[in-house]
Image 1 (cartoon, one colour):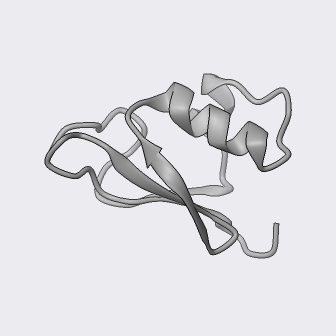
Image 2 (tube, helix red, strand yellow):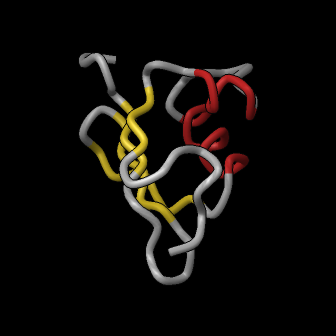
Length: 71
């Protein structure tokens, strides 16, 4: 992963989903931490779980952290 924050989780949409970008590529909409985990595992970070997502400095959370899923 090329940057300090290669994973960007965008602000929640009206439906609570958050766009997820990994290494500059849009990978999908997450509706909770398990979705983020799945996207990261698909990107090669096998073994990651919800706590890794919450604590990782690789992830930039925009307009709210990992506990914000509703607009």
